[in-house]
Structure formats: C-alpha cells, structure tokens
Length: 210
Image (cartoon, rainbow, N blue to C red; front, side, top):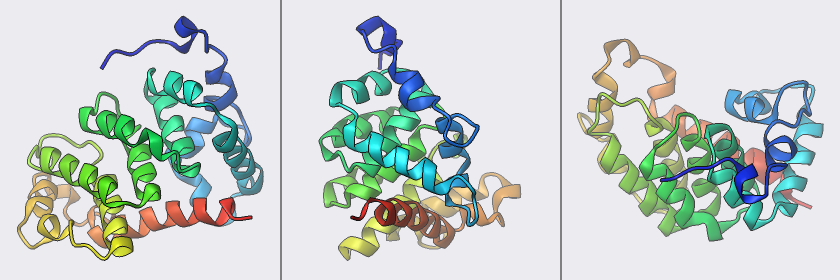
C-alpha cells in the first residue's frame, strides 16, 4: 500500500500532536509499544490514559487516515486511538493493513482494535491473518497478538475460531516450534496471549467508562 508523510496532505501536525507527544517523558508511541501502560504502579498512568482517551474521542477520521497512511509509529498510535475509541468504521482499513503487514510493530495495535470492536467480522479478519501467516514459519510478525485477540473474541462471542490453530501439533505449534528457543517462552503460550489481550482491552474499557 502506498504511504506518505502527513505533511504532503496538509496534516503535518498530527505526528507531534498524537504520536510523539510526551505525557510520561517519552513519546506516546514508545509507551504504547513497550506495554508499560499496563504495568501496575506506572506513575504516569492517569495522565497518559486521560490524554489518550481524549484524543481517541476528538481525533477526526481524516487525521486518523493521515496517521494510517504513514510509517509504523503513526500507524501503531492510530491503531490504539481507533481501538480505544472503538471507531469500527475503520475495521476494513486496519484489516487490510494487518493482512498486508508492511511495517513492524503496528500490527499489534490493529489486533487490539479488532479485539475492542468485538464482532464476528473482526474474528474473520484475525482468522484470515492467522491462516496466511502461521504457515510462514520464517516470519515473526504479529501472530501472537492476532491469536490473543482471536481468543478474546472467542470468549466474548462464544465461538471457537482459534481452536483449529491451537490444537496439538496444529498451525500454532508448528509456527512456535520452528524456532526451538521460543518453545518454552511465555509469550508464545496461547493462554498468555489471551491474558495479555484481556489486559489491554480491560485497561481501555476501565478508563473509558463514565
């Protein structure tokens, strides 16, 4: 997919306003990528989340498109803003970006957003992603985030989309076992991926309630 700097379409300000703003001493995208916002006792939680929620509510669709059309930092931030704000009108857009997997790091934010939307359509996107990328045992993309999001949706919807991926000796096991040193890593245990996605979604849900 083509990409361009937001300045080229008259939205140069969106990077500083939404992506690199510092509510913790670090750029927002860095805190989102690191996962520190989910760690108990992080001293910047309240300030960071309030500003994130405010931006998720007020950012325009055009500004989000400008972020999604650029590089991984802006796409990661846009994915979080879309997920926090539950901007389901962006489902197809982020689904296309997730399946294309053009950049590192941003895909996890798309998975978070799909988990937040919480519908069968979102499960279908995640299933399509896993069908495409789990057989690619040479690629370490966003397979863990996608599985965690799908497990979250299965629990929410009462479905079993993830079962065929996580069955013994299935696609998930094959993908993990392709690199022997990852086999015992907690990050690659399906239950841990489910727990991590729950943390993300519960975090967003708790802070966005009146």
